[in-house]
Structure formats: structure tokens, C-alpha cells
Length: 281
DNA sequence: ATTCTTGTTGCATC
DNA sequence: AGATGCAACAAGAA
Image (cartoon, rainbow, N blue to C red; front, side, top):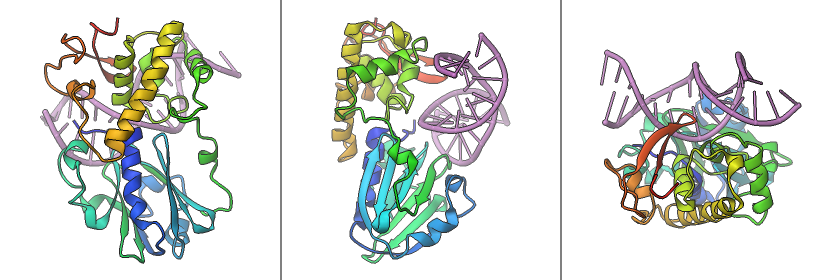
């Protein structure tokens, strides 16, 4: 099972492009017709970055943002199969085996290359082309960046914010609501399941029906899942411990690490959901 | 060979 | 109007 880029994976991939920080862009190569450039001006991207310096690597939820000198910004959403790396590290990247089916990215799917004068080439690769790459020459920051929702690990993401997020989707299953990027930026399928398992909440529960106690557990679980994922996966692409649901969900005959009881797999809101009926009442 | 999976959007429907 | 559900998109793995 291939893994899709969620909060921590996006963090990891975005940091691969830190290799270009401080250098100057000398050339940009891209395929203008590709879907991933559908919302931007591909021609402007092809010429607009040359001569600029990558100054900062940022992420917000599943969105990666690269700030260049002159207030230019490149926004990258990895979609399902987007990946960022440097050309020389294509085969050396740790964890390709866990990130996708076990092969290094195929150069045939390199859709954007940015040459820097320190010898580094930044590569965006996306086999299924569900990603989105937009260039904003500035001045001023892109609306998409300015209007992003509060990060789960920020102070702004508090109990009041969580209550609003839950009550505006009150009748939908909590599993489905957690996948809404406007409310829970960065949460994807495995993080949603991990969070509900940690909080001991049944994924079918309508979001609005969660008790105050369940909401408190949910807030803590959201924070712990995000913090753990960023630390273990986002910083070093490490191996999650067996104490997470993560390691058990893709094993055949998976067992809940908390109760030892069998895990259940079903589709909720069109998404495969793994949960522990013994723990998540 | 067919089915299934993923995240997001856009549309139809309640 | 706002909430909700689902098809569509692409490509690769099972």
C-alpha cells in the first residue's frame, strides 16, 4: 500500500528542497502542459524564478510553500503521489520503500526542475499528476497562503475552534469531518484513523454528537498524532513504533495494539477506515 | 483483466 | 443557504 503525503510527509518532502536555500536559481525546466500547472501561469514560472534565491521553506497542513527573493512564492500541493527531492538524491532518499511501492521516482515523471548555482537541482515528481504547483511572482502573498486555516499544533487551534469545526459538520461521521482540510489541515486517511484510535472514538460517530469529554480527548489526540508524526516521520522519515495504530493497520490480520483485539476495516465516506471496535466504543 | 486505492474539487441533491 | 454525498480525475499495485 502506497502512502499518500499528509502533514508529516509533506514536511519531510518540503525540507528536501532546503538544499537550495541561499543559492540562486539559474534555470527552470518544466512541462507546461501538465495538469499540475493547471491553476498557475506555467510560462511565468518557467522564467520568473531565474535569478531569484530560495529564502525559506514553509509548510501549512498539506501545503508546501517556497519563498524566493523579491516576494515570489511557489506553492506546491503534493496531491496523492507528488514528491520533492534533489536530483542527486533520487536513489539515495531514505524510505522510498515505505513511501511508495518501493522504487525510486521514475525520471519520466519529473515535472519541474529548478537548477541552483550551488550545484543543486530541485525536482518535483508526480506520477499521477494530482498535485498542484502554482507560482506567485509577488509582490504580496498568495490568497491561498494568506487564507489558510489554523495549524493543529498552533495556539489558534483551541477548544473553541474545534467545537466550531465539529458543529458545522454535525451530522457527518467524525472520520469524514477530520479529512476536511479547511478544518483539520494536514490530516489524511492514516492520521484520521490514528487520531480516532488514540482518542478512543468510534469513527461513525456524528461529529456534532461527540460529548465534551470526547472532544477533549480528540483535541489531545489530534495534537499528539501531529506532533508524533512530525517528529518521527517529518524530521527523519523514521519508522513509527508499534505502539501506534500505524504499524498495524496495513498488516493482514491486524490487531489493535491497545487491546489485542482484531481491527476492523470498512469504508466510511468513501474512504478505507481501520479501527478497533474493542477500544473505540 | 479487473478492481481498488488515494486527496481534492465540483456538482447534484437534500 | 448550507450541509451532505459522490463521481471524476490518473496510474500503479494486487
